[in-house]
Length: 245
Image 1 (cartoon, rainbow, N blue to C red):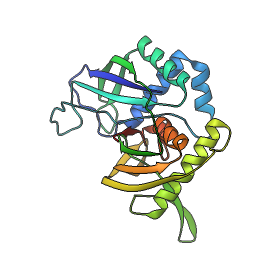
Image 2: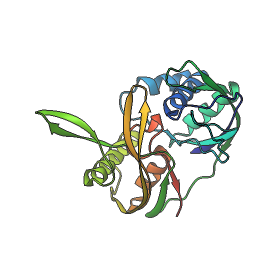
Image 3: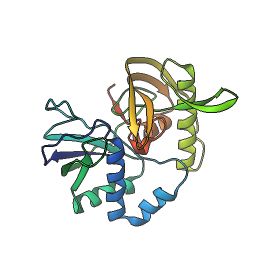
Image 4: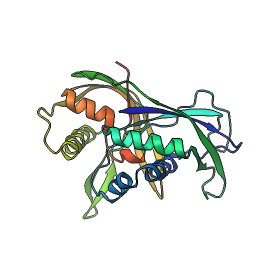
C-alpha cells in the first residue's frame, strides 16, 4: 500500500538539505500517537523494517543558499503492511503539524503542516519492470582493511552492489512473509542516470545512489521491492521506488 502526503511549509525558514532523519522521526511519533502497539513493535524489532518513504518532491523550489525552500511539497510513504499506512494516516490527521530543522545545530526550525493524504491505487507488477528511485539506494558490504573487517558503502559500479541488493531483498521478503519466495530471480539488466549521493543520517554519513534501472525477476520479489523499498535503511528514507515502465 502506498500513500501520497502533501505538506505546506508555514514559516519562512528553509529546511536542512539532510532532512530524512527528521521525517523518519516524525513518522514514528505520528504512528505512536495513533497505534502505540504497532509503534512499539516496530521500535523494539531488531530486524528489518518494512516501510520506506521518498525524498520530498518539490515542484516549485524557491532559491535559497542555506537549505531547501518551498511553499508546498509532497512525498510517498510505502509499505506491504496496510495497518502501518492506515495507522500513520490516522496519526497525521490527528496531529498534522510537525517541524524539520533548518541548520546543522538544530536550533532553528521550519514548521510544516500536512494538507492532504491520498491512498494510491495498487500497482500491477509483472516479471519485467522499469523503476526510478525517488529516494537513494543504500547498500553496504564488509571488507578486510588493516586486518579488520570494516563496512564499505557500495555504488552501482561495484558488482557486489547487485549481489548484496538481491540477498537483502530475499532476506527481507523471508522475514516479512515467514517463508522463502517461491522463485528468487532478481536481475538488474540496465541502469541509467546514476547519481552518487552522500546523506547525513543522525551522526553518520551514507554514500548512496539515485538511479533508473530495468529489472527482471519474480513478480513477488519485484512487488515487495516496490512496496517495502530496496536496499538497506528503508525506514530512514532509502530505497523508495517509482515505476516508470
